[in-house]
Length: 421
Ligand code: ATP
Ligand code: MG
Image (cartoon, rainbow, N blue to C red; front, side, top):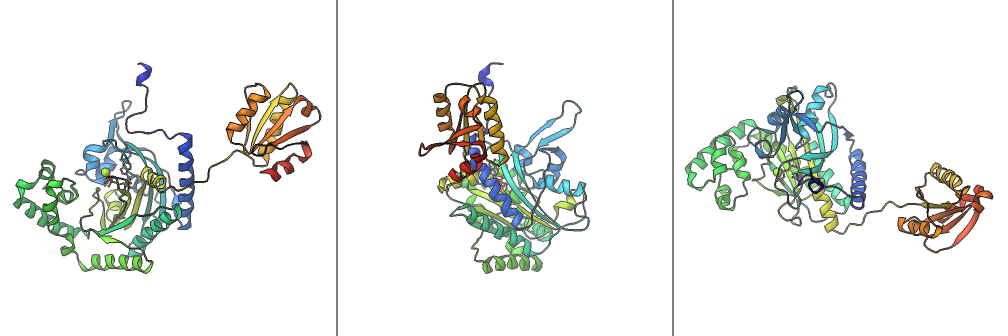
């Protein structure tokens, strides 16, 4: 294999140190925010049995039909898939470990997801989500809480101009009625359907409403509405969600065409959307999925959740010019000489004992070249040690900004360093 071919897989990105700082900051903010609502972390494998996603997400969905990285384990023939989303794995883990035994659960996870899509801005084959799931809660209060949570996060992050789209998918009986209506309607207009819509007409007609084909938009807009089929309980639930949002001043737009790309949703569904990321404008999406736990083999359990696309959120932060605090080195230790070197490593360890961030120069070189490295490191202080200093158990502390340098004994080192940071 030539070296040229050793590149990352298309659509899978390296996150280099400069950019990783933004990720770390984002992850810290998100973790705090999740804990402030009582959510607890759960970590699932990146690989699951293919059957899990087929069953949870639905056979006739974009993800299962054409986006999954599925393969046979060559060693034992198992059918496996790199997770395309987290909800199915999370529910699987919760059931496998019986977490719903005597209490509902508020859980979150974050990490890589994999979908074989056409790579473009905001759409990658490996991307990251933060996912939030509340299992065992039936009422509209938790749906609203999750939406309010998101609104709070946008504020915390400094993100502007995201709008909330809201819809209800009703329950299975009304969905069934709607399905029959849709099939009848689209059958009357077969000539206007594209090939994909025709193929899905009898397997998953709801998905046709999700089509982005401009030629079908007029037809879709005039299609029978699920809203007209909703039963009272679903309407009351949806109204309660809306009134809690209104109570908290969260504005929303009801979008009857919001159906989501996964089959497991019912009742409340929502998306947070921006117009600033081109076609990939949805930064966060979720909703209620009361049937999923049972579908995966558990007792009927109401549940609701959402997932954010981390790459898209970070792109928005950059677009908004949100400044993030950078992590900074406190001290760069420069040393030269037979006695100086072991003394310097001892000093570096002592500074780290005091929780300072310290780089000990490695690789030798003149004081001058080492000072250049100290400068480039961004450290606030350089600690300079020659044999002379080592002999006297002293060091020189240099302020990299002002150039001011003073010599202190070992005993006074910490106080001097702290007073200059
Ligand atoms: P889209 O309509 O953009 O394809 P989706 O409905 O397939 O999104 P979800 O399954 O709801 O997406 O995933 C939740 C969020 O994860 C999305 O709103 C988006 O921010 C992000 N996301 C989904 N797919 C990708 C991808 N391929 N690359 C980057 N982010 C993604
Ligand atoms: Mg998609």
